[in-house]
Image 1 (tube, rainbow, N blue to C red):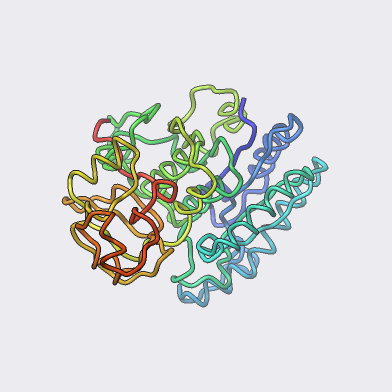
Image 2: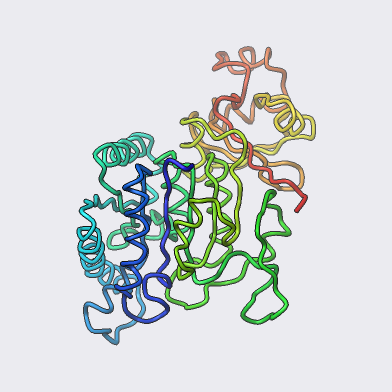
Length: 372
């Protein structure tokens, strides 16, 4: 039985594909969440719909589709959306705690920990966290981008063991079922390889920001953090309760066997890599097969500028990102020691922060399996 679940509700689910919030359908979702809550299963809701709610609240104004107008609609809609959620959960005697996040809250270690502690405290007091991106103030530089990925980051913050992505499709299909009647539902994806990504289509209603490709990315992030992921239709009867019971609904992405530990969760959720470190085949083998640290001897090239402590991408000769980690040396020093033995570092730099360029405790593997 799952102990903690993040439920992501897309705009198309909350509006039933219409321009307005479908309050009656939201009530059915709330009822299912309330049943989990009463069974002492922690529930975290990642909600979309603020901009749609803002349009509805303002009577569907005919305004340009600009960033500032979207921020205005989000500011108006956020309060309206929360009011609807609060009124529905109040019918079940459940309190909510609103958290509006941006990418900056994930990139800064202190803010990440503060957000994590807030979620944990809300859950301890039997309050359901309801999470959305802070669209009213977020710019492109600090946006997570879509609530699929925000829900995956919520899994990392809350250390949930299940992520349910509810959408306007029954799950992942072998091709777009709206244009290909022979498309088949994929019931389970064990290895999220490149071929699986080819199945991804776009969102059906045009109301939201995330298509199937963003859901696959979110699923990959969440499963690496130790959570099962299910993509399913938000209007499927009793969908949340069925998923919790382990019934076959939608597409299941099983969690990887070893969830990321706390520090590595932040590396994965935190700042985008500042630069790339290109490594040779020997280093790739040591990282992927032996769980080794990245040593300077395996580094072929260094691109970009970064400081000691920044997150960097580790790239193989085919330009595939195989790992991500925290650098123990800045870019200038890394360029000086690349290709050298670890015992030469002090001689070259006049000091050392250890024999590894990136220690295995500060590194996560990203390479996906090539098999379906």
